[in-house]
Length: 356
Image (cartoon, rainbow, N blue to C red; front, top):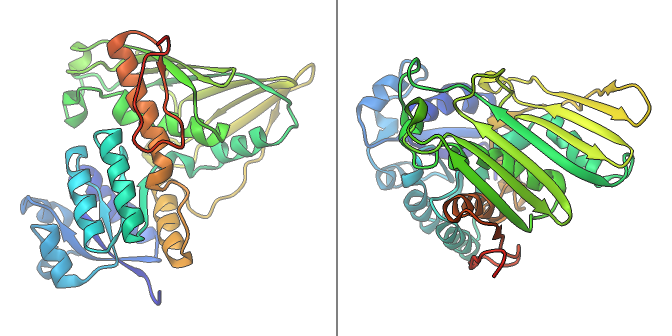
C-alpha cells in the first residue's frame, strides 16, 4: 500500500471527537478522508476541534464509501452500532478498527470474525490498555523465569463517577456499566499477561441504583487461570483513593512480588513497576520506551498490520477470549455461581455452570 491508510471514521460523540482531534493526528500512517454521523449537529461540534469540510461529512456509512472509496473504517459509535457497522464495512471489502467492547454478544462477535476471515480483511478491537510499557514489561516477565512460578494476582480498580455531583452520561444508563465498559480492559490485560485463557470465573455485582447508575457499578470476581487465582475488585463509586485506569496490580511469585499500575488520566504515560525479591529491597524498574501509547498505539498497530499483511495483536479473533470473560462475568453475577469459560478453540461456545 502506497501512502497512508485512507480511513472513514464513524461516530462523532464525545469519545469519537476525542479520537478525531487528539489521536488520529498523532498517527501519520492513516488519513481520515470522511466522517460519518447520523446527527448533523455532531459535525459542528467536530469543527471546533478539526477541519471537517462539508464534502467530507456524511449521514451514512454507505454514502461515505460510495463517495470516498476508503481502505478502512474506524468505528467509534456506541456499542449498539458496532456490529451492523462492522458487518457493512467488511461486506464492502474494508478493514475495520472498532472501539471496545467489540460487540454486544460473543456470538455476534464470532460471526463478525468469521466474516472478516471470509473477506480476508483485518478486523481489530482497540484494546488500548495493552499499549503501555508497564503491562508489556510484566507480560515479558511472566513469560520468563526470573521470579519463578506465579502464585496469585490481585487487581483493584477505584473511581468515583457517582452522580451527583457528576452529571449523568451514557455509562450511568448501561445495564452493566462496570463489567462491560471498564472491566473488559482489565480482563484483556489478564489474558495478555498470562498468555493464556482462564478456566472459570465467579463474579458478584452490586450497587445498582446507587451513584446515579441504573446497573451495578461495583463488582468482585475470582478468576482461575489453571491453578493461579486472580482476585478482582472494581468500583465506579468508590470514596477511596482513585487508581490509574489499569488499576493497581499485585502479583505474588515464587521468588518475590510485583506491584504495578498503568495509564493515567487522559491516557497519559504514568506507569510504575516495582519488584520486591524475597529477602531483598524493592526495585523500581526502568520501563521500556514506546513510540506511541494508548489509542495511538492501537491505531498504529492497525495500519501496520494491514501494510504488513498480518493479524494485529488485538484482532477480533483474539478478542473473542476477552468477550468470553466479560460474558462469563455477567452470567456468573446473574446465576450467582461459578461459570466455566469456553475452550479458546471454540468460536461459538456454549456455556455451562462450573458444577454441571
